[in-house]
View 1 (cartoon, rainbow, N blue to C red):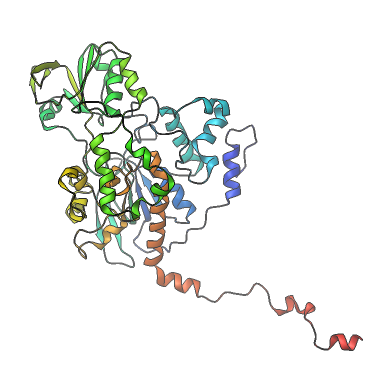
View 2: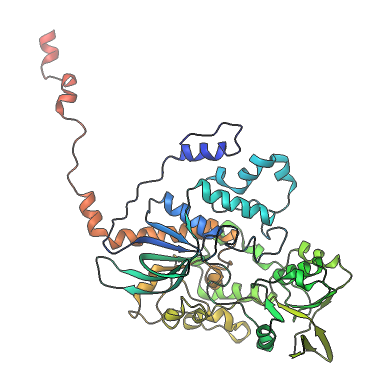
Length: 486
């Protein structure tokens, strides 16, 4: 490689990689019939972080797939994300891990200067997308786009256990194999967008959509729009509708007030964060249930964004009692009022029901859930949390019935379905620092032990000496030599 000159904005990044040295050689033995050691599903910030971390751990045979048609369509940042800025602190560790010269701050300062970075309070959404694209390039991460995992099944025979993967590549079926799976596939990775039943008819007729769906906001110009939900995605969708010329936007929250208490912030210090998985189930459940009970807080600027419009109307303590399609409008019943809307947007979150993911439906009944492991007191009951998978220390699935599906430990979940286990929305930037290394350590350990006999043979093999006695013979002390010299 020819390293860039200091005038090149990537000079520091190339220098960091040079000083870091080459990635360790792939130490995982190859096996006939196994195409990949690890298949990463999803090429966003999490998938990119895993690809780099596995590379630096000397684990080769890693493939990253994404159903999107290219980098601009992958992930959420240039598609479904509608905020102006990321909702997290700008200085959190991202996919770069300990190599700070590959982090967002180094990338941004190399292009805009230190003063420009100091001036921003949070990272711009499109800047983050550009940085991730750069990160994949500079770390040599190759993504196979137009590639979707349709389903998979375990293959217990052969030298090592592995999975048979049924893929769809550019619309054509293809079969491959892999020993480990990482699902780094975003907010709906363990379920599906949750759409209230009362909106099902409206959705089927194109009069409603979830925030996780593609929405033609330009078509909402001059329309009266409803948004259901009080979290950040609901406010962002309302803002985009207003900015595209909606005649009026009404946002309905079932809570009596918009959530504004960031309860997760008080447990973000290293002692608690770094050791969260060691806490008792009751403690972890309490924190997850409390977070959901108090609600996800939208950033103040997301709220200010809609408050700038006089045609924005906020309804709190206003759950919908019913909705009917009349002509090309949705008529909503809220308390004793009726509203007519041209379009409805559901900012109602996502489920953790594995059976709603086509590629996971076949294993849904085998996976241990939180409801199987822990029964909370009545005041902390939460059926959605109960449906979430109960993950191990490497964020791997655990079999519900011991001995029924031991191969589940080779499937690692890195999406918000792991929230009840980790206390963080896996896949968001704050989760990367601690949990990507934890997953990579477990994968490394599992791959080593699965081939332990081969590694034992390798490490006990005869090792040729670097030199023989003649190499130092001239310096050997001869007994009696001093007496003779005297």
